[in-house]
Image 1 (cartoon, rainbow, N blue to C red):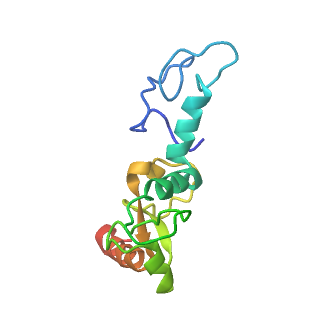
Image 2 (cartoon, rainbow, N blue to C red; image 1 turned 60 degrees about the vertical axis):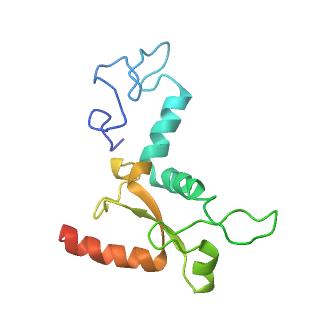
Length: 140
């Protein structure tokens, strides 16, 4: 595991063995790191990019007010320009999940940079603009 639960803002673990590395409850039986499936599920959701990205995209739905058929899922909205996913696709773009604070160089599967609070949905145009600004801002 590349994420240290002691330094993660989501974890309340005190660092002592025998306690859950997420909620700090005492471990019982054969448990070694997590007290429940819920704790490990929540930990993975906020630290593994694949899961966090899916969750953020799901949360972003339901904001679009465009006309659609009854069975069609609501579209995602770009959090910067407020363009609807359907409009973005018509213009040849896609929606992407962006790190608010960039993860330049950090290619690990598990990272605190994948916290849901550090992810946002942007259209490809806004993502390109933000990436260029990030390079200037962070000097990378």
